Image (cartoon, rainbow, N blue to C red; front, side, top):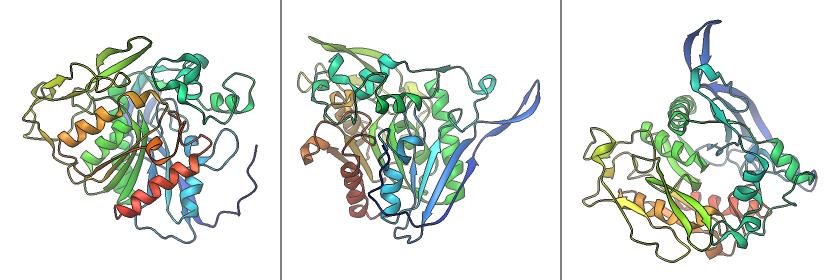
Amino acid sequence: MNDTSTPPLAIARQGYFFAGGEYADTPEGEILSGQMYVEFQIPEELKHPYPLVFFAGGGQSALNYTGTPDGREGWAQYFLRRGYAVYTLDQPARARSPNHADQVGETTRMGVERVRWQFVAPGRFNLWPQARRHTQWPGTPDPGDPVFDQFMAQQYPSLASFPRQQALNRDAGAALLDRIGPAVLFTHSQSGTFGWLVADARPGLVKAIVAMEPSGPPVHDVVMTGAPDWFSEGPLTKPYGLTAQPLAYDPPLKDASDLKFVRQAKGDTPELTPCWAQAEPARKLANLAELPVLVVMTEASYHAAYDHCTVAYMRQAGMAKTTFVKLEDIGLRGNAHMLMLEKNNAEIAAVADEWMRGAGVG
């Protein structure tokens, strides 16, 4: 399963450190909790002004970017070979970031069935209209298949409280940028909320965000139910529109209740969910208005039903420098949610690279 077809990487410097965290009293004495593990590699020939900071999504870790379950190079190596400095992260309380449950809260886990329907075999379950278009997983989605077993082995427990996850990653992400300086953030799925929050907290240090199927849709979750109705309304999980934690709006908010939302009567097509938006006149996201953002959506993921809602909300809130790329529209077909691990991962990375160069951050 190891890829030996590429030349060695030329690395000038590599290492790790921890960002963020706070000291807390416990029965065993004072501890440090909430810190984020950060691993970095600086290429020998550094060609770009800003490093890339990679946040993984729910149940995942930096491993999403440092290789693939079938042994190919990951996005970290892809961008290192093109002269970018790369920082890969483990969220606070996950993987190599210590989990002090008495400080940060309970965790939940993903079983095999959820991993299959959500990530590697959506067509088998057909819970959303686009699911059967998935073709890019590099293996058989069953225990015993070596690729599936490798992917299942790298699933980690996640904090059960999504608002708590967002607060911890906002604070640790801000501490990371305070240390390394301006950067481009790559976010995926659950960590999409972290990108908006870190950029809101450090607007001068986040130069751009590549948001791969960021946590959505706005305001209310959607539950995928299968045919014939496909979708049902989920709980209100993002009272600040894109996040559960506060974002800076203009005019300012006293609290989340100042935001008023309206819902489409029905989706634009039967394959798309109804969208939530702000009631007009819409408040603007004060610290994100000038931020270049690339939102990438795949053809077969559950996000294919609602990422357009996230983009519409961002643009309504003043994020005019948002680019929305549907991979099928540029000839990259058959991907599901774990796009950075699938067979054509290098082609998708090239899309982000080209966009960064065009946005003046690559």
